[in-house]
Image (cartoon, rainbow, N blue to C red; front, side, top):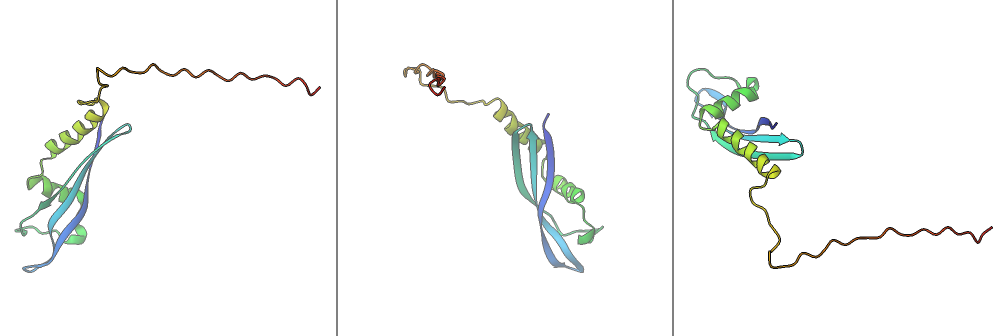
Length: 124
């Protein structure tokens, strides 16, 4: 089963916006997926309009809150998670592979004989 993890990597902040300070205008996000030793990722940025109504001061923001802004401003959570999951699936079951050329003979495997160890009996 694939484990999905969303993170906000950085925030671009306008120092002054009207009467507000430290207003987030862009969030850089990343969606990571893992399944056993396989990994997938997708990343992007989301920009926001100046706030109207309720405002959360910068020190009080949470990652969950900013991710919610991203999802409500065009970041398609389901599509991105499906993309990351498909990246992992393509590693597990590659849809495209390189096969040997059918007209080139495949050499037989090389069999390596195990070395024979002879005991030294002359030092008696």
